[in-house]
Image (cartoon, rainbow, N blue to C red; front, top):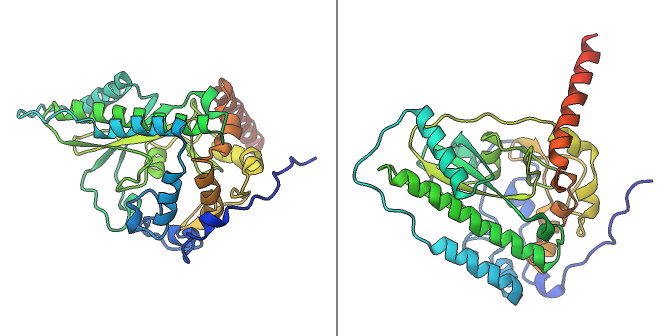
Amino acid sequence: MPPKRPEPWTPSAEQMALWPSVSGNTINGVGEGAHRQPSPVYWHAPDATPHGKLQLWFYNRITPFVQVAREERMRANEERVAPMADTRVEHTAAEWTTLVKDAARRAGADDVGITRVQREWVYDGYEVTEQFAIMLCVQHDWAELKTAPEETAAAEVIRQYARGMRVAKAVAGFIRQQGHDATPQGGPLAMPMLLLPAAISAGLGELGKHGSLINRTLGSNLRLAMVLTDVPLLVDTPDDFGADDFCTKCQSCSVACPPQAIGDEKNVVRGDTKWYVDFDKCLPYFNETQGCAACLAACPWNIPGVAENLVVKLATRRARQSQMQGS
């Protein structure tokens, strides 16, 4: 018997009165066969996007409990990065890679990877001149996240955005103390470039059906942050451990999604076929629940201890299939 989906959900008339005439899916490039840079759609300056009024409406609905976490994130954003030293210390790419990854873990990163910046990740109208992106993962407290879409989960997500920013500032500060420039970036406000494809390129995981990263040990129970720099670094390679195949057969997040924004088929988005969450269905519920995250609460990869076991099972299944094809 197939799992039962929630009853259809209807957004408030108050919110929908602010909805722009243009679809967020159209802005995101759903159905477009050609590659292009992403367009700002949400989490940018409210007056710079058609959905800006909805973003302000979202802010005005934040409860006092969640506001405490939001103020913590704002303090993290305001904290200063260490000044850049006058004397430049030079290292080989291999040495720099070890040093920055060690600095990230000391600062509290739960995983770290490195990739070379690609233009197709940079938002249209923005510029990134740095060559490398140091991608950082920080893990949620599962007991808090699994309460989604309650406000306890919303507050936890915001707290981890704050932690991610502090980790990014610590890594950037370490590089700056060696006499080289580095720029920290943290969510949820949009960076000059997309974090998710950069994290995938940096070997931190695969794209899940719910539109979030799935890491081989953390699952999707995480937030991302980033440091941009020109110090020479060795890049990591994508980590294909079977999460994409798993999502093809799993329906946990799509069944759990109250606005039914998660489909069972991939979409063509700006030239790539990939998992995509319907923006126009997701955002209204996201706004009315201060961040939702019901899909992450339902994701099997996030249950403590499950991710590592799934990776082993998927590897065993792949090996068995390979043997059968070779026989």
